[in-house]
Length: 223
Image 1 (cartoon, helix red, strand yellow):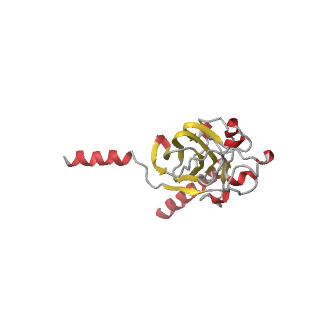
Image 2 (cartoon, rainbow, N blue to C red; image 1 turned 60 degrees about the vertical axis):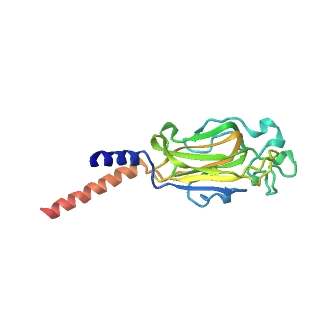
Image 3 (spheres, rainbow, N blue to C red; image 1 turned 45 degrees about the vertical axis):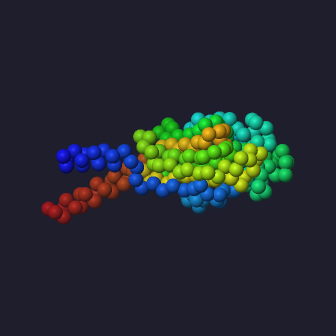
C-alpha cells in the first residue's frame, strides 16, 4: 500500500513543473515597463515592421495585423507611435501609427524552431479584447508551468491603452510556448524573450579538456 501511494505521488510530481515565476498583469505603456527590461539579451517583437521575425526560433499562430481593420482599431503599445498619450496614434497623424497583432480566440507563441534554444524569460503585452484574459506558459514536453488570469478589459476597441497589461514567465529550464486567450478577438504587442547564453562549440571543447586535465591530476595524487 505504501509503495503504491509513493508511486502515485511521484507520478503526480513528475507531471508538474517547479521553479517558475509569473509576472503580471502589470501596466505597460513602453518597453521599459517590462519586468525583463535591463536583462542582457532581451529581444522584443513590436510588430512595427508588420512581421513576426525578431525572436530567435519563435513561431506563432497569428499573422493578421490590427491595421487590417482600419487605423481606428489599432491598439499597439502606447509609446510605439512616438508619444505616450493614451492612444495608439500620435494625434491621428498617419505617419505615427503603432501596430499590433490580432487573432480570434487564442494566440500562441512557440519557441525552439530549428533547434534554437528555449528562452528562460518570455512574455507579451495584451492590448485589446474583452472578458477574462488567461495566460498560460509551457516547459519542454508541453508541461504546463501554470496560468495567470486577468480582468482588466475596458470595452474600448478604439485604440485606448489604459487596459494594456504585461504577462510573462521565468523558467530556468526553458519555455517551450505561451498562450493568451479571451472570449473575443485579441490584440497583442511587444512579444519578448530572453535567451541564456549558449556556449560556442570551441568553448565546450576547451571545458572538456580542462575537466579531463583536472581528472588526471586527481588520479596522480591518489597514486
